Image (cartoon, rainbow, N blue to C red; front, side, top):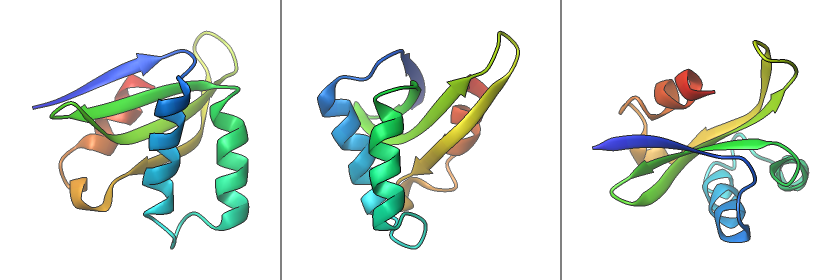
Amino acid sequence: MLETKSVARVATQHMRECIRIAEGLPEYFTQSALDALQQDLGRNTIWLAHEEQQIVGFACVLRKSSPVAEILWMAVEKDRRRRCVGYLLLDAS
């Protein structure tokens, strides 16, 4: 069962999990992207996707106004794709 949770400011261990997921996708996240992601994770709203009590995806969102947000970063573990994780993150954001 997959559930999506929100975290206004992620704790250090959750930020590390987001970086871990991004590092597992080197075709999308270069070193400079990982550096920028780390900065953005500390400043913006993070939505986490959990499956079996493990973080399997995240979205880093910049809230521009009440109805408007910009998704800065989003990633799902390779082996968790095609399971609606990304869809649920988008829906929650």
